[in-house]
Image (cartoon, rainbow, N blue to C red; front, side, top):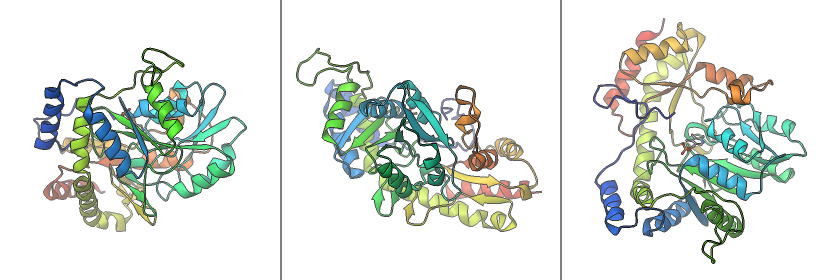
Length: 378
Ligand SMILES: *Cc1c(COP(=O)(O)O)cnc(C)c1O
């Protein structure tokens, strides 16, 4: 995920994801620097929190140093810790599980469904115990998951929902913004996300008390009225004013970014239709009534393709096309090794690749990628 630095900027490699930064961003960051407010006080912090929470139809926004910190802050503010369990999908970026572990709680993994690749609500109820405190649904690669069903289960069992919306800025489900569901929602603004602040994240909530608690915890646990008085142990999870300035500028363009991503997806879909008809590949399905933002465009390499997924990636790489495998399911990796039925997630992870998905991608580059893919089918 964090391979951005190793990206060969000067070569002709088509990167998997790169940010689009322009004059507006430069101007905003310059303004922050010139103001002298370069750490976590300054006008852009407040402005970004207000604008992003309004964009997601939420009352309060608390910006953080990154998306993982946002998840940790959210879980801590909800009082989750040792002895508790939190349900997470196995097919997600490792941060979703790590944030749970940082609190001392145990992440409990759930398989994916095949309608959006999100966590399968039908398999959630089976893993709820007396220790379960929360569920973290993830909107994988910018595709809303079955959030209605998950909310229903959470309500029935009185569990918190912490949305991990780190890959789905601007996505919607049934006309409601992703990030507006559950007790708290968390986003990341890492360089390759839908919008970026370099590094950064945010927690959104409609609950004033939770918002205040997160503000205190973000700043070492310092009392909001009495400076240098600490009522609890907190963290330094603050974002800088320079990062927030970048965020304000990026947020102004989020509509354009999403439109561009939707165009990219449509061009890919049209060009790859013949491969789908042959059964050589399959596309990432979208839930009905979901507005997807296609953070990453994904395909599955099916048996009929004739060569393995890894071979396809290798050949694409040789042709100057950067790809990535889908996330390795977390339950298969050393820190979280778990047995159980995770067959859908394992199959998706085994077959899936992310294709270049940046807003900087041109139609001619997509044509080239599709042409190379077609030439590889045996
Ligand atoms: C990117 C990401 C995060 C973590 O964000 P960072 O800003 O990199 O800490 C968390 N969850 C998911 C699903 C992500 O994709």
